[in-house]
Image (tube, rainbow, N blue to C red):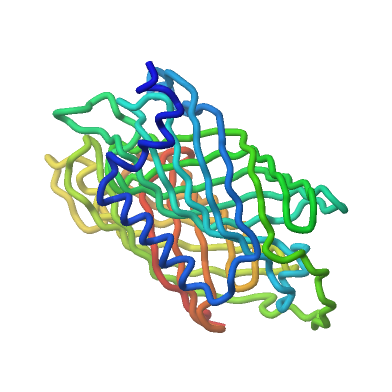
Length: 374
């Protein structure tokens, strides 16, 4: 029926979202207005694909293909900083994404507002190829509900984190007009803040039209010192997070973490960290069993971790694998992982946000501050 067609999606997506859609629009306006420099270009496109069920419980929910639209404002770095040269002048932008996942009742529709980067892989006279990464705020109009929708087990909260990884290629038709093609995976989850949280992976191919306001100028020459800003550093970090234990609908628990990290940076783009984590996990006592008598050590965990760090100026991405050296609760196994962003506010202070997981299972989102001791 025409009412259920994919064409109907493009005209009706925002109607059932109501006030939450206005929140996303407000975020777009605030994001763009907060940027002093006008965008270099605008990009709009359509995507077609399917939800990839990364867990067996999700397979019955995938009953059709997904369609999506994207619209973004895009900037190109101006060459004023060293990392602009290290990454061959990347682009970055603000994107609004909306998708119908092919099963309105159990997967629903989703939207996201994200900041993204396009890191060049290869540049030619007319063809350019990029690695696409993005992160932001995601929204779904269909969530699990004990009374009304027990089959919608993918997500338990309307607001989620959105993460994108993909490949992007652009072809220059003229100085002002490009066409683009992409392969991307868009992931929505709330980091186990609210259960259930199996997450949704939407794999799509896409085509875009790109308009450049001004022709792209050559990258200006830069003169830079060859000395790394911080070859070695020691950090103290304080983080906090919130999680929920199974079954869904239970109380929220805080998790506080104190970390000490030694960071080694052999190049402008990459580095390594060794980290000691001391967790105070208030959810652990319930996980061990409410019938037993608990004490403070039930909530204490310690681990050692190795992290790979990727630097983009003041921003860095951390990919970490750790192992517990002490924990009374054994249900999550020996190993834990972290995916995090850190930003240098000053030479000594950092802010950070991340996700702690046990392999592919999210444990909780976390945020905090760090201080460079020396």
